Length: 286
Ligand SMILES: C[S@@+](CC[C@H](N)C(=O)[O-])C[C@H]1O[C@@H](n2cnc3c(N)ncnc32)[C@H](O)[C@@H]1O
Image 1 (cartoon, rainbow, N blue to C red):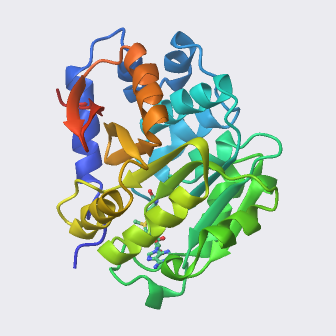
Image 2 (cartoon, rainbow, N blue to C red):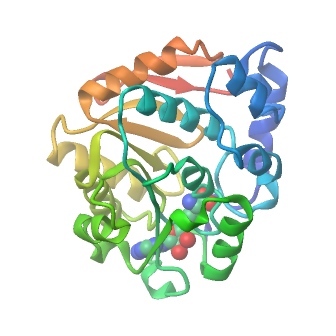
Image 3 (tube, protein in one colour):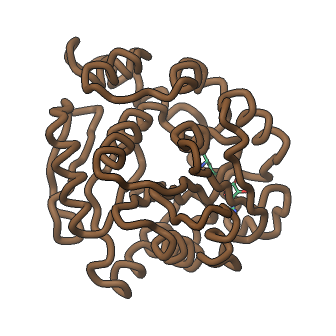
């Protein structure tokens, strides 16, 4: 059975190619050389106090998150701050926290980060995504890398049985979500439910990050996303494909995020039509 995408070899190859192909002065070149601080400074992005430590040590944390995504998260966070978009952060499918930690780190005062996972209740992990999830390991990592871990909220269970109301109730602050990552059960039906639930609790201008849409080992993800897009026409549009994630927002905002990221003049970007809109593609191997 394929467990996520197997080994770290793909990620290592990825980073190897980045080292080979980026120019010396480009921001993403700098973050691939583990200098997130300089990359963010060059674009005047606010960097959460714990982000640099996690960026340096991310390879020690078990999971499937390419740490260079933190750069895009910071760009989105900056856009949201500039446009008065406030709300919580959330993820379905947290495993050991590798992709959740960068989200929690972005939580400002009065914002929360919600972790949704079945954890040890492996019977809900219908496609063996990751394997048996260890709650204690997740919690230890969060405490290690997030000084604001008092902002953490946890919902344990089968995400296919949960609802936007449950997510909104859990964060206890009456706000919706401004960033929501989906990386739980990769079957088509559950992906559709997760995407609908995340969409329904997004604030105006919120972003959904969908993992593995293009990954050949997880065809259920594209099946679920395509079902969502057919059923909910023009509710969400993509604006970025980067490092195994597709980023979606409401159509008018998707265009604004596109413009914001495009203006950052990141090397190795392409533009292709996807779900009928121009979408940025970050290709570190270009
Ligand atoms: C691939 S891992 C997530 C990886 C993590 N996002 C990262 O980047 O390191 C998938 C996670 O989804 C959880 N999961 C699988 N099926 C689920 C379900 N039906 N409901 C809730 N969580 C589920 C698993 O327990 C596991 O922690």
